[in-house]
Image (cartoon, rainbow, N blue to C red; front, side, top):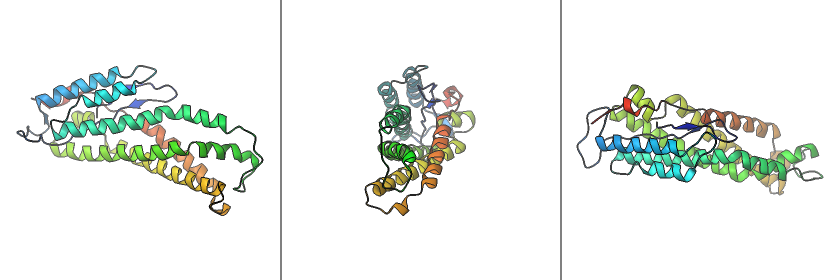
Length: 246
């Protein structure tokens, strides 16, 4: 996959995942494992633009999306590349914004409380308020992570069918190990989002306090954090030149 990697403020890495599909539509099918001249040219331009969209400390998300669009849509390969790139940008922007959102929720949760309707101790109320505050972020991340994972799975299948192998395949697609990390992150995000949704119902008196399981939520928070770090640590070779091209 095309993965220009830059340090994010408050995060480990940004890895922009992108992948390629099979045979050119309405054109002669290129040899196995070979990019057409147009594909190679447009993908090279996209990689250069993606790298320019990020500095050592920040990412210009608008420029990153514009870079994804540079792949065009002339072939199935390019359309899949563009879709996967855009889905990944959406996910990594959400992750990039996560620390600031979390700090905001931590600050807002420090207001004095006298207890909660969940039967937990007052000492736990700030943590509960923080989780509830972050609920929209968890919900969005669950959706974004699933979309990015689905796009990468489909793209890799098509790239393999197209005949790409070795370093070229590793450059163009997400490897199986990283796909598993993405799947785990999507799953953990959705699980945590469901936990917090139930927690909100309990605090609103719409579900019995017995439905609240603090140990389960704490465990799911840890799984979310570990899987998010694993996704952020993904990176593959950026050697488009290793791909045979016309």
